[in-house]
Image (cartoon, rainbow, N blue to C red; front, top):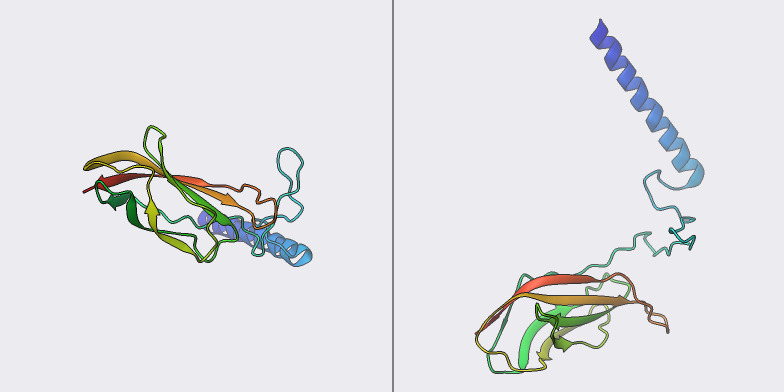
Length: 157
């Protein structure tokens, strides 16, 4: 009997939460878990909303690049996915922070397949290299957005 009473209480609690959540959704047009269009950050600034109310940027990941030794020109597949609403600027760095290459702004749906390094690399492996993604808005200010740094290995053959 005690078990039936516990199940009944749990079921009633679940239904109550579902009803409150449904009422809130239909009254306000948004989910309890969703992004509130009136949200502000820690400094009181209104949060930017995108067309699908997510501020995510698709960043392609790499774990390894293979470059030819003693050649500045290298073949790559760096691209800005078409789903993004921002420009990319990519920078390839050694583990010590030495800049090997940097792109201009890359539009969504566009890519780079040949790059020219700042210097020729000798045969070997560069561990903990970094491919840095900087993201910028489309407006005339090209304001910076979130970015990412991908740690990778460069095999030079």
